[in-house]
Image: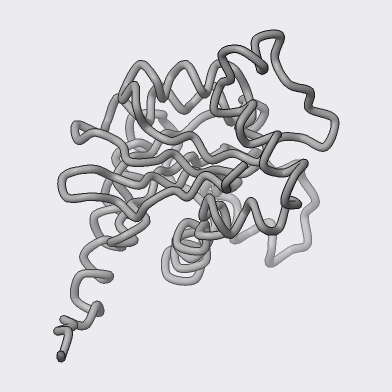
Length: 209
């Protein structure tokens, strides 16, 4: 069986990289607590983002409680993207039926590139009507997980990891506002800032024959 190669995003389609990270809630007493060594339990939220693999821009985001399952936010993220998907790429935490269904509802023919768990087994219809997940499992069994990752381009998640590093280096790892509405506005402003910085810092490349 040939390895299922996932192409780079075609014109008008988005190759979406999805991941999440924790952000702490910084109240007005944060500075005093650090100054006087006051110990208190910190509250956290979870920031979920979708990044265009080609441009590196953040194209979708949601903020939830820290214990919310990553897969549950795929639908809300996809609702923010009007263009069709070429591929949905994420880590093993997104290996859920609900994720596959959410992607199919957005773009039926989009590739879903999520590494199956080591204990994953084929579906009951794998022999007669294999799903994308069944084909991934077969490719891994025949060629190995590393070869599958390279062919399916599951190892192109670096842009979303770079977004989180840039976010925390430039803006910090906390949210300053108390209310949910203001936190959402804070997230929206941060995304516009980071995308603008990326646009200004990205070189214009011209292919020379």
